[in-house]
Length: 152
Image 1 (cartoon, rainbow, N blue to C red):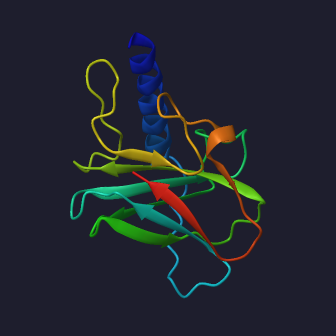
Image 2: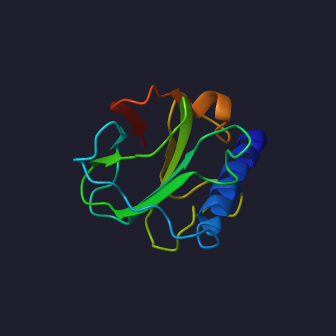
């Protein structure tokens, strides 16, 4: 149990770092509209409707994973599922991390032993326990429209 708490705590710290880094980067990329073509679309499901903000970070390499997102957005959660187009990715694979920030503090909240108290998710096939890795969360992208599932 202690290993699980430590791994989940590490995830929380990494997500906290990523979303705090958001304030240090240039303005976050605006969310493209659904009319944009040849953009992968994140199909986010399992959200708590009408609660908080959905914060998404997209990474384009193992070297930048959890360090410097290539694309970010924060959008008000209105439904239990949302579709978010992500355009201008000139890569063959990318990884996505997401949190539902329930209280608007722009970070993943955790309990005293580091276990997240807010919903979080990632693309690909992340491990059930512990922080997501590039290897487990990366998804292939061939430069065409595609639906990428992100399940909370």
